Image 1 (cartoon, one colour):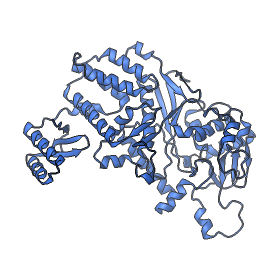
Image 2 (cartoon, rainbow, N blue to C red; image 1 turned 45 degrees about the vertical axis):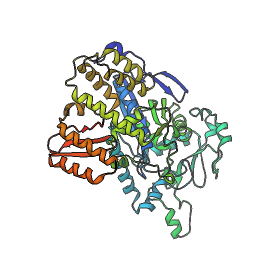
Image 3 (spheres, helix red, strand yellow; image 1 turned 135 degrees about the vertical axis):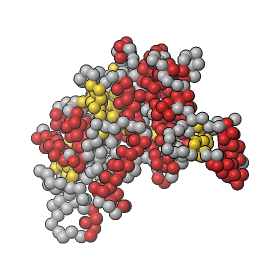
Image 4 (spheres, one colour; image 1 turned 90 degrees about the horizontal axis):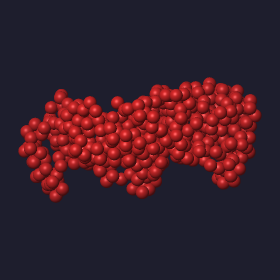
Length: 494
């Protein structure tokens, strides 16, 4: 357990709203209410999306490490998100319907479950609630009605809009005043009064039409539409988060987190809605994770560099190796993903697992100084790269007992989330040296592309009752008996 002195150490965070690092002070002592923007479930999440989810998970784990009780909410967007990320373009769910020949609800359910499975693979803690936009229409309609009553809306032929010019504080999150944002905006104005105005409720495509439905009209008609005081239609993308965060956390709440690309539009508009309806900020602290690039480039289907967690698994990687890779970069800096870097992360993770598996039982007391340094690192705006450096320095310090090092490392893993306790409980599996020698010889043959000879050694290894698995971090050998748990031992080639 950490000492009482440790518990008093300030948790410093970078607040996008103030553009500065500041001590975190919860609204209710000992409790933190956390809201994170979740996925739009029209397609699979990719590794860049999952970087944001790991960042939010680490934030939650650090809060809990500091003994806060955290209530965590993550929304599921299953309606209202247009391809333009604003008020233009086709609804993303409608496009997925046409692509896959399924109903919008079938698509939303399928990709929601795929997303939740990826969270489990990365050991991301489950939110207390995953509210879906389609299940909270009354709350969104009530929000829009309040904004209308407060004189902040106007009507066009395609929907009800928020008049950003009537809110002097609009633009605070992105650091631009409303008029500056308007001057620099490059959007399709349509009937909007100002470029930064945004839809609160979009009318049905057939709204106000008196002619018969043509085949072309039918292709534009959405499945997800509801009756409202303004006519049949669907809520704007931004309404769901303001409405659902208020329902589950009350406003203001402590921390709103998400990806950096949400700052200028989605989060800016969330703040405007809550201020306009309730006269209070939606959240006191706003935290945003930076982008992930792949081989120095932005992810794009045209470049063939969009990867899912499933893609990594099919290439032989443990998803937690990707989690370790992400821990090496600060959440506010762009991280460049390469398979070489993932290989290195896989090897580092395997080294940690090997250490805890062979070190025996944790001692009653850990390494106090290292624990203090670790706490200082994570409490400095989630400095996980420094926290990892502290952990590795401790692991390699043979002057300290293995039991003490393991005890502290198990505490650190409450934040890292690498499931090291599972490796410790399994313990090392002793593979005979002769089998390991055959595996090393086989690997050398494979590197020389002498695959026929390598297959002979594989058969010899299997005949002896062992399996050899080729992974990006090197060959692993394990007993064939799958009934009893065993720790895979990575062969280290000399």
